[in-house]
Length: 574
Image 1: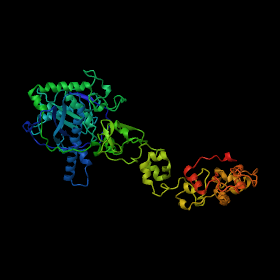
Image 2: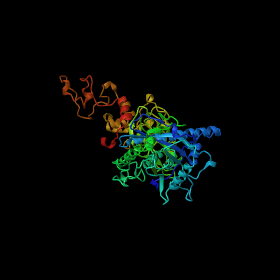
Image 3: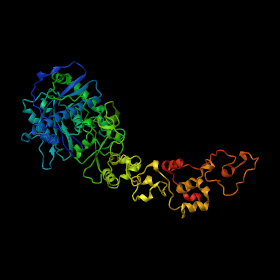
């Protein structure tokens, strides 16, 4: 039976976790489970040297060789047990009357370079031919007498796989081989490329689907590969639409029907039924209950394992989008504009108390909390990273847009000084200008909070230097004290108007009449209502005990300057 390859656009891989165990066991070790509509496929996990090396390199280099080796082995077993568990969980999407479960029975891990086999030999192009690796692996399995019993063997490699015609591929397998009574079990194998970032979950699902007799969608069935279900051939991250964006986590109706038919036919054979209905005892398989792939390695680490240590999750301000496609920065692009798209590991954080499940951001009581500032966005600002920019110009963090993009770096630059967290708000601050009101309507002490050591409790207002070509004193002398009732002039000429304010005239009449001319003294028999108290408050004040005028107190002025800060058109009052 000729193997069917599954092509996938693959750009680069970083590393993988690998472990080895050589516990021999026979089918006599099987124990019959309760007859339920659940069928078990026992999987032997085999990893080549490239996988081992990547995990050994990740282990703590300060440890002695034995301790470092044990750490690498422990991590490999945990990682690939999680891969198989994820595959088994995702097979729940099959529309069948039974459930298929995958049971990892043991590991065979090549951890010594002297043990390098001929499974995955690079060609002149530094790539490994997938079909040749598949055949080599089958031949090797045929001669092994001490391996654990298994129904299907999975070879994971950290090498780049390709096809005979030069195409990229992430896996290779054959159709209808698992629990097939007509062929030896060593024919039921798959070769899967792995990078330590759980991308192999999807490839393994696909190749195990082939072993259960599922063909590619669109091949001898009515389904279309463009719908991007598990058994589609080609890239999982291309041609994404609103209709098919989550299909990569599910089987198509055609695949479900093919697998259902294969399992039902296999059950009719005594040997096939025993294969499906019984399960082997696991040997050296760790308990991964409660271990969540996307929490074990976060989004940044997933990208780094895929594209190298200088890559990272391309965060653009919205975490929830990560569940459909994990965007990773291309480390070869200095501008930070190019990125690669992959699929996130289950449980990758996507919000506060939320993580990714089958392409959706869902809440979970066990999902971690996320601070309001998750991290800096990945894009650069004026060709500088957030960290580079805020180290030189922390005052830019006062800008709301900048803070939203660079909250993490801004928080690192925060001086924790109330009202002045990022220092002066503009360059060119001088001590002699402190307490002066600038032409943009802000108090210099506010703009130059670091230089002026700004403290609201000791604030005093000062005049703007020039108002329409005149000092404030000259302007008020020319136009009259009543101009201080105008909030704009009072704003620019704070000190002058404060000096002229006479509170004995009553609230709202501190600067006398608002009219220069036209106010008449009230007759002795005039009643209050007959006096123009709004414009002639000083003239009428003999009859007025309290006026609700519109002049502003210093407290109101401070609120106006520091809180409201309107855009003023001084020309409108002249």
